[in-house]
Amino acid sequence: MKTKQKKGIKKARTFIKGLGILMTLMVLSYFILCFVLALIPVEKEITTEPKKVTIYFMQSGVHTDFIVPVHHKVQDWDDLFPYENNKVYDTTFHWIGLGMGDKRFFLTTPTFNDLTLSTAFRGAFGFNGAAIHAYYHYEIPADRPIIKLQITEEQYRRLCKYIKKTIRFDKNKPVLLHSKVKGTTFDYDRYYDANGSYSIINTCNSWVNEGLKSAGQRGCYWTAFAGGIFHQYGK
Image 1 (cartoon, rainbow, N blue to C red):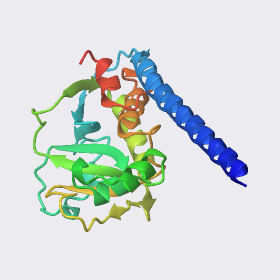
Image 2 (cartoon, rainbow, N blue to C red):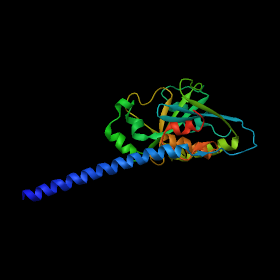
Image 3 (cartoon, rainbow, N blue to C red):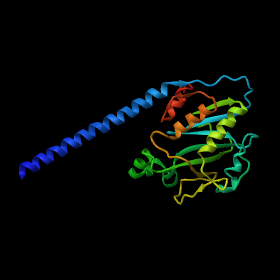
Image 4 (cartoon, helix red, strand yellow):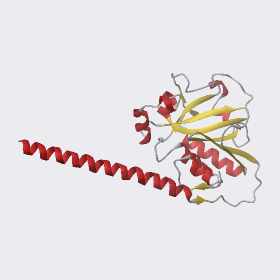
């Protein structure tokens, strides 16, 4: 009996060791792919159309957002993300920041110090769903990395279509999400439900990268991190 127990313990240890090696290889492979694929550029399209629309994309820590005009003949974003949904009602904003992220993280985690292992694990593998963060700005922030782009109205139309395809609608209105956790929203921002799921493959940064490419702008083949996008713009 003791011999069988020793053999069983030895097999279990061998299995655990092998599993650890496999996990290590998977993690290393992921980061290698993140690095290599982010270096492969996707060039912007060539167009002779006038570039009348100004947009931005902005890095906030590990997160990236688009910043676009609130009002434009292509899209009025206050029609989808009404001012009255915000804690403070103010219609004087010129810009709106739009980013995709982990729904559970958005609604339950004010800062990274509040991040739980459960939320992080579930989010990494796409179990937390996704949400759109809509944040109104009076002016373009000057305290973080930001890239300014001039694009055509047709390119902007394609970007708006890409963003709206991410939003989950109910009766032609984006589904407003409610957080009961203090510090997850502020005076001029709210969260809205999104299609798909956030994961280590489909991150906020890969979402912005795909949006840039949909609008015919320079991007990278794929990236999970903000650095991959900013690298393509020399930042």
